[in-house]
Every structure is written in structure tokens, then in C-alpha cells.
Image 1 (cartoon, rainbow, N blue to C red):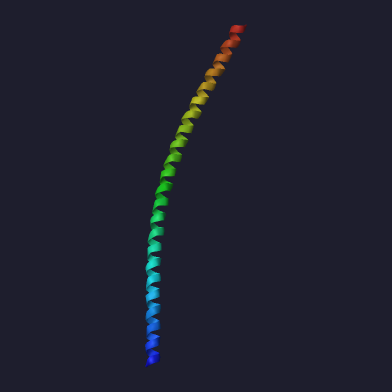
Image 2: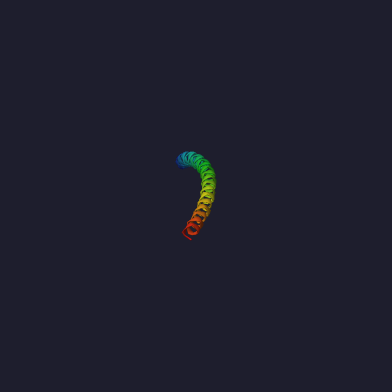
Length: 83
């Protein structure tokens, strides 16, 4: 019976160890899930920011085209005045 008691104590110790490991793994999983949620939210923010920057870029490109047209028009007027 001593051998059985020793084995039972070893099993009890192993079970406690496995329960601790399981608890730690559950905690780690919860932390990783939270981190994933935060990263997804950050990605959404970055996607919105990218859209806004593209919109601003398009506005600036339009203004640049307009300035180019105005510059060409002024150069044409200057050339006409030189004649």
C-alpha cells in the first residue's frame, strides 16, 4: 500500500502542475486575444488614416494641376506681351 500512496501523491502533484499550466495557458490565451483585438482596432484606424491621406493627396494633386494650368496661361500671356 505504501507504493500506491506514493503513486497517488505523484499523480496528485502532476495533476496540480497540469492545472497550474492550464491556468497559465488560459491567461496567456486571454492576453493574446486582447492583443489581437487591439491590433485589429489599430489596423482599422490606420486604414481610415490612409484613406484620409489619399483624399488629401488627391486634393493637393488637383490644386497642383490647377496651378500648372495657371502657370502655363501666364507664360502664354507673357510670350504674347513680348511680341
